[in-house]
Image (cartoon, rainbow, N blue to C red; front, side):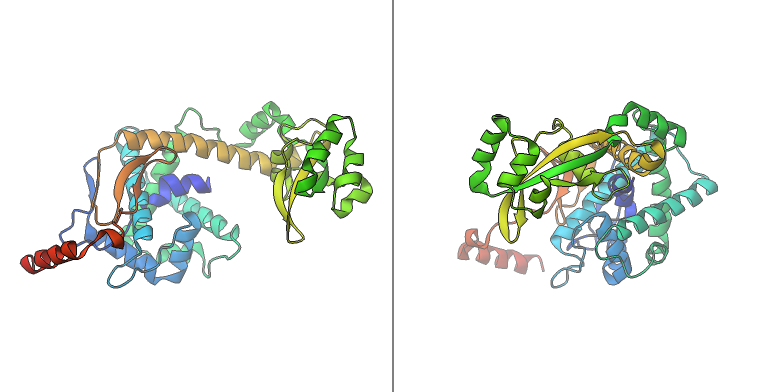
Length: 363
């Protein structure tokens, strides 16, 4: 749910302007506008409060530090905020006009608790947690910004809940999902072989000739587990390594190494890592519950991202070019990008002179 909030909710925290003049139009989404003054105030709050800035960066890993000279924020950070603001306004408008959603006091209170929890989770998952609490981060926002953010959180939760593809986060739904994907939560025992790049071809040839996983590890691996035939351990859903092990072995047959290894650094040298599942044992729901919840949240977030993209494509959006470019990317979809600036090499003396003349005229 955290990434969902990053894409659909926290966007509404408010973008900040990069070098906009006082009479700038700011941002407009389907007729809803955010003035330059409002966005500058929100940016100032973020860049001047270490704790608030930290939580914002946990949601969107972009530098939201002050910019050079008189700029309130770096061009990269400003464009990121503009993008988040556009997404937020589009989602909020969709919830209001299409879903006819108008949150009551109870829903707003739940949304505030939800937002604080998601911010706390984002910080806790980081290697460098934020210095203060998520409650303190929200309190550092200007009143208008905080009110809007909580209301937008409520709207986002409503949008997600009403998607046909959304899986309810209830115990009954989780058990149903688990039963339909029970093999995805097997406890997996694995053997590994850490192989020098020059020996990969020989390793694959030996396996194709019928050499067992244990014998392959003993002959080719440089890891200490070679003495045990590569046996490395068993990983269930409650293990912190489970997701990685599951991903590495998801399409590999038992007692077989994949033909394409993962590249790793081992003892300061580049090596090939082969991982073979040696057994798969069903795991009871009680022990798999946390991983099932995480998988459902990821599936819901993916569905929400698809919906978000559809909403953005159908929206009428105007972004002040002084802090970003609104466009579509072949991989990331519609978004605000950092303004494209000419290289210094392409700006000759004549162009500079023309700029000087223009500056003198429009003083």
